[in-house]
Length: 430
Figure 1 (cartoon, rainbow, N blue to C red):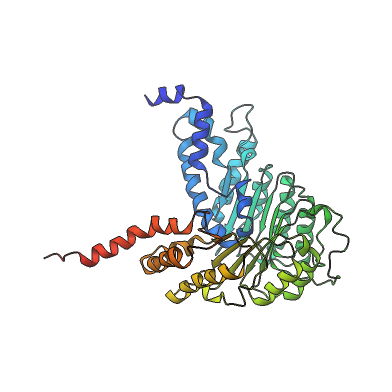
Figure 2 (cartoon, helix red, strand yellow):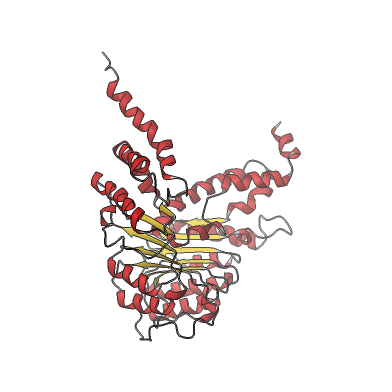
């Protein structure tokens, strides 16, 4: 019966089934562009476990039978996650064998041809990165690359340059580059700049250091780059603030993520003075009032603003003096909230109702924040605020997936709240 079913079902139907079974939302092009400003450590911690689970599913699919192997093999390494140094040699060997025709069907494309995403995250152990270069060379159609190798030896600076050079092999297809390496070596930054200059389709760049220390992004990069996120904005070679001459060029840059872990306010002031007129979306991490004032002064076309704060009690009256935006994203940075801090969220939303008439959407972008409001401790307070205090708001209040927050809380939190009363009034066992 099983064999007959596999024969009778058209291949395109199985293909669609495999696509659904192995799909991880917001991890591949074009869906990943919807999460452009969130790409980073928190985003990776959410999506990488899902990628690992999807790989286990794909591995099981190709082992069912020979027909499924032929149909599903191209999904197997569509997204490659290396989170252990020992995996590098194994994956490298597999990709090399398929590239040399071993194990592949005659005339079929090698396994690495189908790879669209590569994640390398290695912490707590020194990685042998030389085979990683060979892995990258087997993946000519990569669209998304995220590299985060925290523990490295001092002599490995040269290996990082080899990795950057290897990524040129996928220059024509690379759309998202998340280069979360600690290196600030001038020679490595130079090779990073050279690589980015060759990525003609690059849309999202996340880097620990600003690659261009004079603050000027090359024109060929600006023509495709839409989102820039850097941990440190260090403009060390001077330069005059202002966007003189840029208005007549093709500038695609529309989003920046400003990380205030390090206080690079002067450099960011120069940057926004130069490119702020083009920006429509800004994400502020560890937000403070100086940066909000800077955004209001330098970014006249801003329409979307996301604030990452330590907790919701940081949303003071001064912090809520915002430019005329239509979208506001809010999230906390992992600090477990108290009851008072959760109330501060809804108090801030009530303030915005009367002070920001342009606002149309407020979204809690961190699923952890939504999950906390769904718990027994906060559910009643959150629902009461949304149903009564904020019922007449002109803006929509959403969860991280874009659903109405009140509906999400009622669907998830109400059963838990009912259980609380069931246990409270249940008779004890004799």
